[in-house]
Image (cartoon, rainbow, N blue to C red; front, side, top):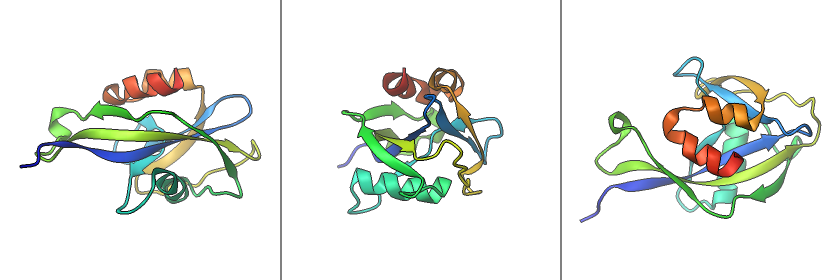
Length: 142
């Protein structure tokens, strides 16, 4: 019998020269800002998922950013009880770091998950991201 699990996914950190990161406003919760993230498709590596999610959610690709690193360990968090399912209680993420090739780059939010974007200091994003994600953001960005 299988028990509840954590969905594997990726988080994408895009930085510009001054250290600010690219944050996106969620379409379903006005005023809720976070980094792009998403689950791994069957047979997909975390790095492949990071590039795919980056393109799908922000419109950015290898012409606008370059990969500069990966957080060495997975981060894990439980979802709030109302968001948990019998087979899934949380998420486990690999974090990937990208730098913009030009600080004037402008992403294109997908309109489904995200509706707006802004550059923000990592510490400010940690303070404003939803509570259940905050420990992971602090672990990686803090």
